Length: 72
Image (tube, rainbow, N blue to C red; front, side, top):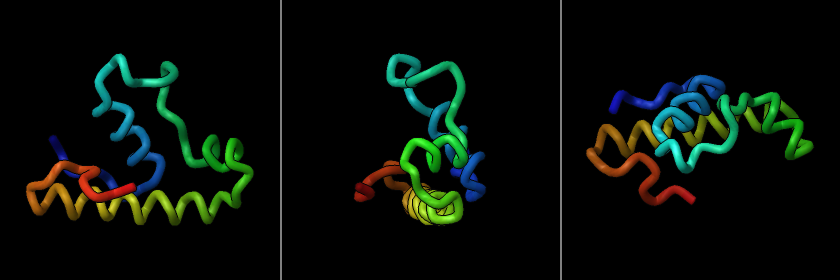
């Protein structure tokens, strides 16, 4: 599995592509704008949160752990 990208929209695509097909919701991955709209949050706040999440996932990958291990 390749390292998770840090760009928030690319990270959301990476997560969607790495889900088993039965766990995928929808036919295309969400983007930061979609999430911000659904959550009624500021786009910049959502973007920052996904960059932090992507960094944690990459750290886990480099350490040889499951990508989302310890992330809630």
